[in-house]
Image 1 (cartoon, one colour):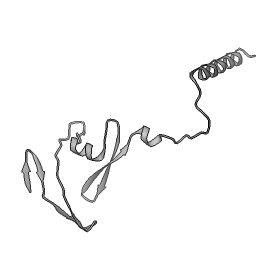
Image 2 (cartoon, rainbow, N blue to C red):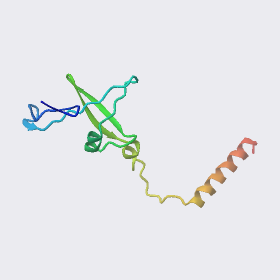
Image 3 (spheres, helix red, strand yellow):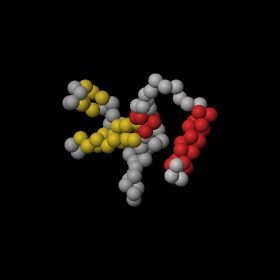
Image 4 (cartoon, rainbow, N blue to C red):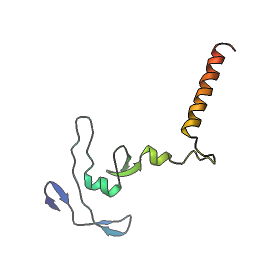
Length: 110
């Protein structure tokens, strides 16, 4: 193993599960008193992790793998599909006014 500027860099390893030789690099981070760690920028770039993304820690025997789970916008985009066109700002305002007026009439007992 080669130590370079605080990073341990094994040259390569054999993955029995995948049956091939893969390049590996070990990047270190420190756990804070709150149990937080910083994901090194190289890993964030490789996995496409950006601010507010969810990440999963996958326990695999005595090792932990990190996987990007995306953000709430990516996970929910397009789940409420409709064939209707979106309302204009004017239509939204009119709908809100009608709803508020109906609520006021109902509260007044009419």
